[in-house]
Structures are given as structure tokens and as C-alpha cells.
Figure 1: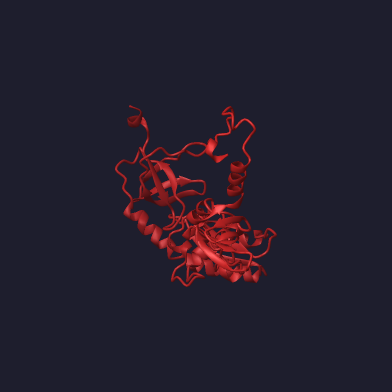
Figure 2: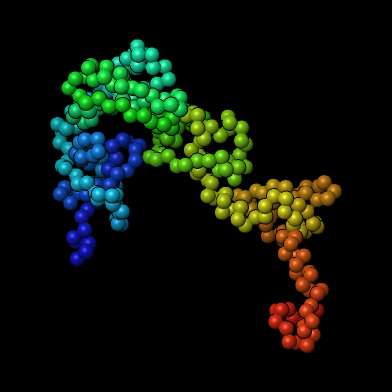
Length: 306
């Protein structure tokens, strides 16, 4: 009975490679992935495309899920295409106005019309850390597009790289952010360190000027692999004797060690033992407790070990 009363939920994207938003769809039955719908958002009415039909429960945001208004009609789709064709012209106009106003540190990355042309949003990025004053620019653009509400929204350098597209720093023909990344994960320098990647900025920086998104792809795998290996500078016992760990090779499950004579060798984790544990076992076997001989101790060692 609960499943029958539970409203249906669909995942909608407003960009082809964009974040997924969930809406309540009980008023619009039989929706399928690929269908276009009209929804009300915080920035007005928008056209989105159904991307998924969640099979499990979805945690609603504060205030609950917004309902889908209706399916998009062929007229809506034609209207959206018509306004989309004007976005490039609007972006060029905005760049020209920004140049006339002397806004040198501002880069207009894209212009976006709403599906019905009622709102025009310019996406921009700023080179400096200070907040840019774009009131004059917005007024100039509002005068130029009187029948449309003009907005300016700042985005980050990764969003700009996603919009512009092009070849990635690794040489791939299309950047990951433009191909399949719908959201940007937090990335830190420790991810490069954990994977043994050179910290040379040219090696770990993407075309956006930030740490490469791909640093997060295998990070968890390296973290899990390192948990089973000794850390650097730890003393271990190998088949060739005592040594110190110089480096670890997580994906091979191996360590590179250095002996006292300066020689180096690589061993799998099954071939080595921590020096501290082996030393403790040896001390335990040669230093039995006082009651061990009488059979009254609880140290856990057999009498033969004493």
C-alpha cells in the first residue's frame, strides 16, 4: 500500500552533461528517459530532459520535491532551439560591453536563454579574488534586451573548461569534464602523493589551471592497497634479512627495501614481516613468565616454547 501511494520520482538534467535533479512526476505518467518536460525551478520555468527513473527511495531536499508541470510540446522544443541559436550573439555582445566598460579581469564564458526566452543568463569567471562589480554591465545588457530578464552568474574555472571543451592536458581528444563528469569532486594534493605521482604542476594541473579531476579516479584503490603495506622507513624482515622500506608499490602489493650494505630489492607483502612483531615474538619465546613452568600462567604460549 505504501508503494502505491508513494509519488513517482524522475531525475532530470538541464544540460547534456549536467547535474541530476529530482522532481515529483505523479501528475505526468509514463515518462521515459529522453522525454522533455517543463518544470519550475528557483530561476524560473525551465525545460529539462528525463535522465533516469530511480528504483529506490530518493532523499527529498528541504521543502520537498517540486512537481513536473507538463510534458514539453513540439512547439516548446522549436522555441528552445530558436532561442539557443541567439546565445552566441548575446555572448559576443556582452563581451563587447564588458570591454567598453574596462572590465579586464572578467571573462564571459557563455550566454544561456531559458526555453521561452524570458530570462538571459551570462556565465562569467573572474581572474581576481575580489568580487567583481558588474552592475553597470547588467544595466547595459538589460537596455539591449528589454523584453528579457538579464542575470549574471559567476562560475569556477572548472565549469569554464567544461563549457569550452577541447583537448585535455593528458592528450585525450575531449576533456573528461566535457564528456561524462556531471559533478566536480573535491581534489587535494594528497591524492597525487598517495598515488606516487610527480608533484610537478605540469603533471597534475589540468587545462582549467586546477588539479586534474582524474586524480580522484583511482585514489580510493591506492588508499585501500596501502593499508596492507608497511609505511616508508619501517623496518621489516625479508627472505634476505632485515631491511628498511624505501617505497611501496600499492597496485602490485609490494615494497622496495634497502639493506645495510646499500643494496635494494623488491618483495611482495606475503614475503615480508614487520620487524617489531617478529622481535616481540622472539622476546616472548625466550622470556617466559615465572609461572609458565608450573602450568599456572595464562600467557598463551606452549610449554615447549620456553
